[in-house]
Image (cartoon, rainbow, N blue to C red; front, side, top):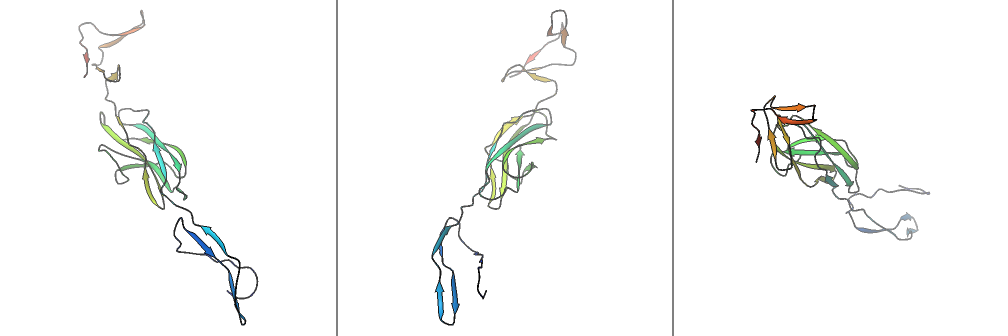
Length: 183
């Protein structure tokens, strides 16, 4: 601009994490005059940092899982959520559930899953630099008619062969019924 008084200029096309030196100047018929030199360093912008939580509330066709955006990379997180697939390393091109925006913890509900299927899940967060993924977690949906008796054993039973006996407050298989302990 021209004239006297204060002024502001917007600098564009600057590189991140770079120190720049600037001086204001003014020109009149006598010549050019420069102000005192100042310096500034531009910020470093990165992709966000996100972690993936463990799955909870795992059922036959549903599960709950989420994550935590711990660093926004210096820019706002426009979208966050989880991606999942029956194949490892899911991306946003896989199935995804959007669970808001910004930093912090979040929880997502997955639905329409298949019974007795292993799913791979990663939390994700998006800012202007790109999409970042958390570590991969996996879980297996349950099968109707099965309950776990340990982390490596399951019991499968037919309707009616597992019965409750209130007299001694215990569950047991009915007489002449067989039980099967899985692998």
